[in-house]
Length: 227
Image (cartoon, rainbow, N blue to C red):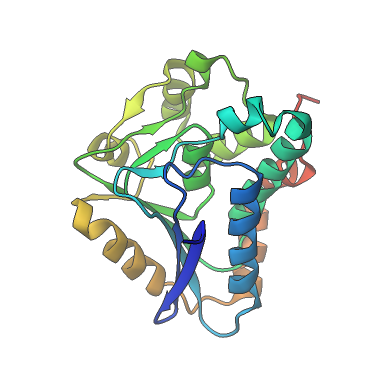
């Protein structure tokens, strides 16, 4: 089975991540980028939905075990590739919706935030930015991404407490747009995406780049350290 597969339902491309916890390593990022290439090469109305292939996980963040082992020598280059991947998602030229069907932790939470909209499972699974508890700094581009999506109070709370936030609370805090039963996460995400699939790609991308210019620029630069 491939790490990522893409199918189309009407005008909506559905990208399913099938790597268990969907932790980000080089192979995973390459596979998702290739899928995004295919979506970008398409013509006509389009939108994108991403979802985890297992009920329990959307994405559990960086593959720290791989980074401590086989990926150790390429750590700086890999982290740069993750930042650029997040920038690509944030500036993607068609509407994007994250169907958060399970845990979205750390960089996995940032992947969800890089989408235009988010639909989360209400009954199980957490959104969490745990860097304060796992002693990992957040790169400038990642911080700008998070800040651009969350209200000041929620930004402060999420970063400094590392709290695990369930779907209902995430909706109340404005982290996600909808919190729905598990069997409605993907259908609701597809419906939301389909309703926007006719947006012109050039203007959609231009507006997003204008709205989030600082965050996108920092991510696309791949800068790991503070300036």
